[in-house]
Image (tube, rainbow, N blue to C red; front, side, top):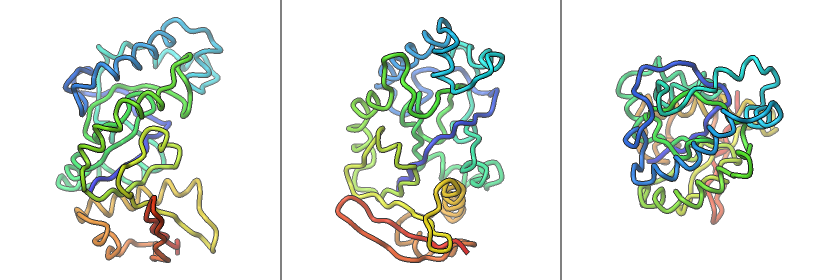
Length: 245
């Protein structure tokens, strides 16, 4: 089973892995396609005015820009799953998981970076800031990655089941060729939106702890705080609906 996961706006600084290179990320043959995006990004970061940098970073205080002016090809890196520092990743608690659970996520988790495109969770990336949905000048990263990486993702996934834990926005980067399974969370009968990130992190944590290998195994998994409400299925996807208790 392959698990698709979203990135986060927040990032941890630093890193102890080697700088970004062709072998850092999955699909090394397509590394030049990632460089096209990186080069556009660094051009704006290094030479852009305040308005351009605000559009890129979504940060109002210019004093914070210095953190993101490092050159990627010499900057330290860390695993993508450890770099991201948002709500979903807090609830995932990757650092507290067993080695086996971490290896499961590294192997079967695919993250979708606004800047670097599809990544294995264990791929090492530098610190960066790119506001969700932001273009880089006139360059549109999500369109670029969808065009250049969809076929190779389809090939890699093959006939494996897909648990898609991304927010809907990330369909702009990749729509699975085979029917994925998504999740929806209800609280007192209403759909949970922002805090759905937290529950996606919880589900990924539990899936990794028990090294779940199929959607059927997921449905049988007892996850504290969640009760299976229903399973809705269309031609495009299967949706597991949980009630939060």
